[in-house]
Structures are given as C-alpha cells and as structure tokens.
Image 1: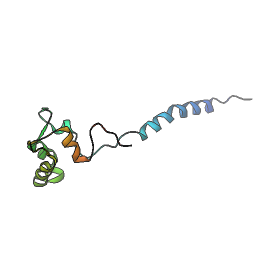
Image 2: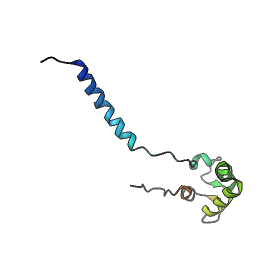
Image 3: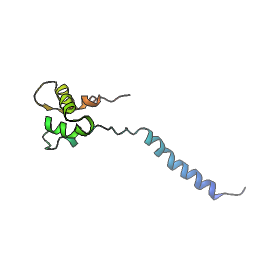
Length: 98
C-alpha cells in the first residue's frame, strides 16, 4: 500500500479547522446598540441624559433619544444604571438566552 502524504496533510488540516468552525457559530452577534461602557463617557457607572442623547442622536435624533432616556430611567433619578441601559436592547444582565 502506497502512503500518500497529501491525504495525511488534508486530514490534519481538517482536524484543526473543525473546532474553529464550531466555535464561530457560538459567537454572539454584535449589536448596533452602543455598549454601556462606551456611552458612559465619564466612567462613573451610570449614563446621564446628555451621554445617552449624544450616543443615540445619530440613530434616533435628539428628541427621540431624550424620550427613550425617559422611558428607560425607571426610577427617575436622571441617570441610567447598567440594568436600565440593558433594557434598551432587551437584554437582561446576568441571564443568558438559550
């Protein structure tokens, strides 16, 4: 029986590539919504109305961004916590969707 090196190389390449293919399927899709840390410009752990409007005005416009901030600020303290901010994209902090 003749030993073919090309077949061995192809099998090794396939064995290396398969785990990467399956890992890519498990990656999360990037959201068009900005991340909390990106919007929290002063890094104080909350997003002010001005920070939110500045981040969202290109998508929503000034008035709509201000209205959305009012909807998300559930405790009406004038700032968004990370949990309140996550509600904008329908995500719940600490829980994973299946």
